[in-house]
Length: 135
Image (cartoon, rainbow, N blue to C red; front, top):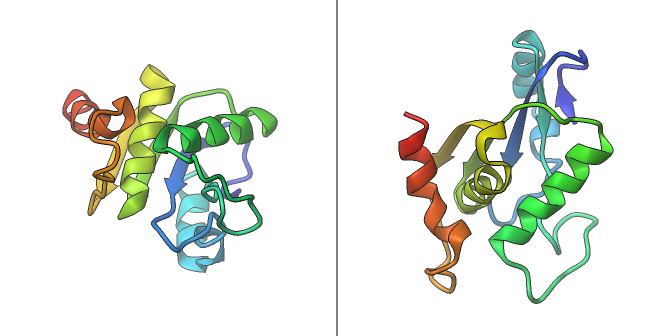
């Protein structure tokens, strides 16, 4: 968690790209200061096998959204959220938007990377749908 500490802060789930961990954004002082100024709490969860997490050979994009849901619940963050992802994190952000449905008010993806191994998976297809629906 980084950015605002206020209980009424908006929440943004920032999904790391490949080779990055959830702690990356928390180590960026300019980002943290801007989020605090805007009253936004940043949440970033490492993918399975990154940072201090355990590797799962059967990991799918949808699994990341389940992990995010567990973290948000443990932190008592039950309100609306925004999802943002860069590179591989774009697919993770789409999975988060899909899992949280209308609770996810915004989806921002950059340099989207959806694995070809999951072309028919709902999480892989949702990126375009959610982006179009949110315009």
